[in-house]
Amino acid sequence: MPFWDRKTEVRLIAGLGNPGTKYGGNRHNIGFMCVDHFAHENSLTFTRSSSQAKIVEGRIAGHDVVLAKPQTFMNNSGVSVGGLVRKFKVKFENLIIVHDDLDLPLGRIRIRLGGSSGGHNGINSIVQHIGNQEFIRVRVGIGRPNGQENGKNGEDDVINHVLGDFSSEEKAIMQEVIPCVSQALQCLLTGGLTEAMNKYNSTDFRKK
Image (cartoon, rainbow, N blue to C red; front, side):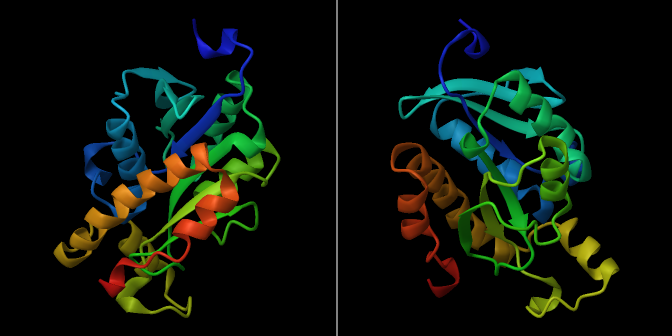
């Protein structure tokens, strides 16, 4: 029986990115990568499309869960996520978005509920289309261009950075980060927000 015919609270976990092989390895697509890994860990495969997203439905940690990869391109992520929220009647506190974060160093994960978008166009679009910012974000650090952390990079530098692929050194770090994000998502489902924040917000794979 489809989830929308059940009287259960659906958890929607959406990873953000840009569709197409051209963007597949980009830093901006880390949300896709993380959700792909989480789906694989739970023996789920993206075989359906709904609300302009690739989706898969499954039962994880006792919850009905929809995993999604919006195909609307990053800046219009809200079109897809908003459609899924309405279709599956997802409460805002049961919406989890996995996305890249320039202001978080590579190798860091940060989980939080609500707050500003930090200038992330995908998050801005979601807030605009669902009319609420009180959803969970799993921010995956990609760092800023040239290792700068003061937020003073030029627009072209930022675009080239987020639409560029991870370097070989960065890939080695992300091979540890991505499975950790899957663990964090599992923890969000089993232990809740506070437990996941306490356990994973201090993770830093640069120290290894």
